[in-house]
Amino acid sequence: MTSATGLAAHPPCPPQAGRAAAALAIALAGAFLLVGTATARPLRKGDGPSHAPSFARSCTIAAPETKPLFESKAEPASADDDDADADDNEDDKTAGVILPGSATCLSLSGTVSAGLQYDAYRVPQSGPAPPPNAFSFQTSGSLRIAASHDLASGLRIASAFEFTMRTPAEDGDTVSIDEATIQVGPWTFGLDSSRFNFWTGDEFIFSTRVPDRTVGVIALELPLTATWVATFAVEDPAVGSTTSLPSQAGRRVPDGVARLVYTSGSWALHGALALRDIPGPPIRLGRAGILGVTYEAEMLGRPGSITAQIAGAVDGAPYIGSQLDARVVRRVLLGTDPTRGFSGVVSMRREWTDQIATNLYLSRYHLAVPLAGQLKGKITIDRAAANLVWTPVKGLKAGLEASIAHARIALTGRPVPAGLAGRQISTQVFIERSF
Image (cartoon, rainbow, N blue to C red; front, top):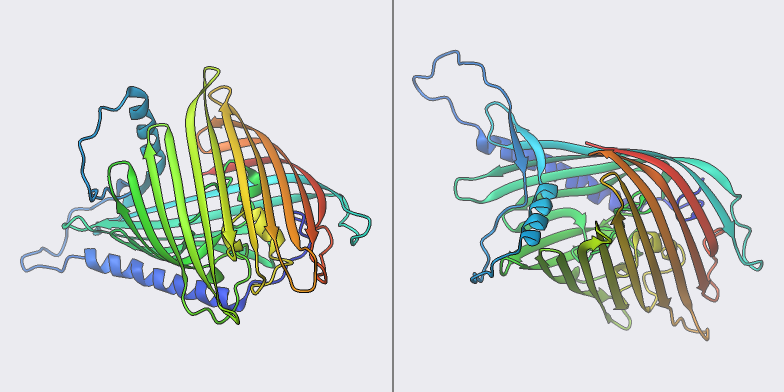
């Protein structure tokens, strides 16, 4: 069975990733117990044997408000900026309940999607025969459990666990763990998306059907001002999702990531640097950088946005390209391969009415692989996708999406699996419900 990226069969997840995910799940369960225990009140003398009935209360889990390190007198914001900030704040909030006898806000959220997809392949005559053109049913469901408790001191203790089930299976697994984190104030521990990431293609069904690139992470988030936020993290891509590229064994230290984000009104800027240890001989230092921007504005009288991103890396291939690109490259690339490359993407969205919107993106991925004994080695992937989405009510959307991907792989001595190189055209009719 093929997926949206044209991969016919995938190797199973490394056992290390499964053990790490299980350990994180156990740690998360302990965090829930810890939070629940901390909020329990012991019985005091004089308490009667019976109490008035208590009921669950509604609550919301929002991003914590941390005092900036450098406070400055802000300029008066325009009405448009205020409206944009208000919309962002509403999107960041998750509804939940406070159970009787507890001060912890617990929330459940998730997404269910189903679609009918058609894939067509065109491959070079010199390559292996592609999979047959065919229809397939694509279904997925995700569930996220989050708990948050604000102490009297203002310190927030929170935890979250999210998993997704997909059919057909991705990389041999029908279930992937997308998040398993414990948050203590500005610190985050566990399994989460890389702090290096910016554009993830959330508006496109083909991208959301593939597991996001997650990593084992310890991160510290520091608001510098009301608009600038710095993040410092140590990450291990080998612990994350199956879309991460192979990592060579024997690394001495985890990867280091530093990120700086600016958010104000209609603008969002994202810049990040990453360093990684490449075991030898010879020992090498991998590095990567990314710069992304999103601007939201009216286009012909209707709301719209444009996002642009460019990333480059030397011996840091896991940090460039999308999760769709990584799922192709990981089939032919080894963790010891020297690499040098870049990726770029431009994405646009326009809302034609309150219920109808369109999305479009173009991307390029280029990776040079200077292997010994060959004149050149390179991987190039070009992608284009567009969709039409109907959202009659909040949390329900349906639409039509089409994409084309053209991959060119030139690596002497490396077998290229069937359907990996060449052109793939995919079309899907889908419906999605979020709660």
